[in-house]
Image (cartoon, rainbow, N blue to C red; front, top):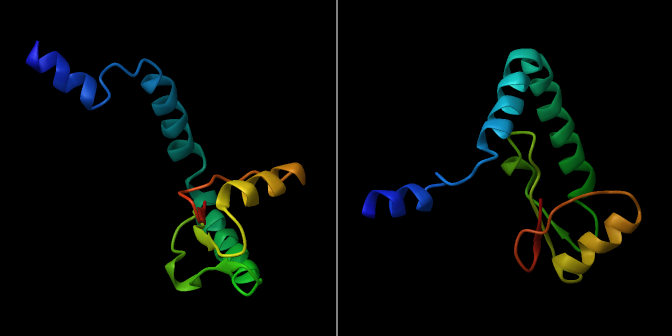
Length: 99
């Protein structure tokens, strides 16, 4: 019973894990060359939005294809909804951050 509880705590009951792993394996096997390009695009995006009013972003922190930045002009949830309405999909990350 104790082992089962630990298994559940670390994701052992996550049935979709194989599907997610299959996608990740496919990407690693077939798109590894594109990863460098994705990193470069993320850096360009970060450089482009870093100077915008209401955005807090240190471009030096963008080392991968993930861009995280702070929103100082309104709550992150509201910011994300406004972007979604314009066709740009991002994720809120706390009350004042976006990914």
